[in-house]
Amino acid sequence: MKTLIIANWKCNLLTAKSAEELFKLLNKGLRKIRKAEIVVCPSFIYLPKLSELLLRRKKTRIRLGAQNCFWEGKGSYTGEVSPIMLKNLGCKYIIVGHSERRKFLNETNQMINRKVQAILSFGLIPILCIGETKEDKEKGKISIVLRSQIENALKKVSKKEIGKIVFAYEPRWAIGTGKACSSDEACVARLLIQKIIAQKYSQPTAKKIQILYGGSVNSANVASFVKDAGFQGVLVGSASLDPNEFAKIVKEL
Ligand code: PEP
Image (cartoon, rainbow, N blue to C red):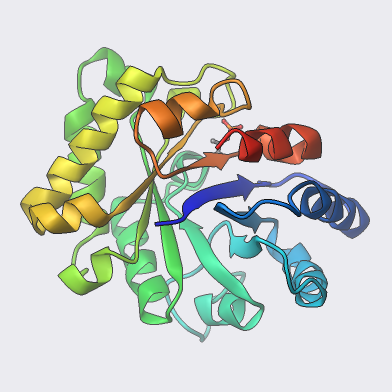
């Protein structure tokens, strides 16, 4: 299983030129990387240009991903973006259920489940984000929240399909706060996710799934998640906007 490093640019970089420049700098800094797959997830509107740049760079380790999509392939859904459109633009991955979408756009587990099914049905890889709030953590509800998010997001997802999903454990209180989870706490959450998958599918299936950590990852803490806590990669927000720091993160692995 290849280590995955996802760069989530969120709603940053306000011009196409700035997105293009950052992309070129990231690519330059990652030229010698062989061990990992790097997935850049820009705003939808920058995907065509970045896709064109990628096609010109045959040896790059970078792949494209989107930050969201709709659950239908096409039709009268004003303002939405189809997974097929994203596939046609060269995307391989789609982030789904990011906590900022759950929080600001009221995305429910049911909506997330429909998106997961759609992404899989169109041959793309969902990066399914799950994680508890600070309040859930304080009330000792991490396991209840993770179980509910996972079971609901995976309704109608077969044993064959589950192995195609990338899970991203992202405690909400660690996202964009500079306060990453400790590697011990993250490790417990990772084992819990595997247990939930084992109960729903099987033990061998649970052992094979790819689980990433996300939440204030930087070059100083990334090894504690991947080397110590057993995650098979990371989802990086803020630090992915700094090409030097991002290259350092990747080199730590
Ligand atoms: C994220 O965007 O999912 C994220 C983890 O952001 P940050 O690295 O800034 O906490």
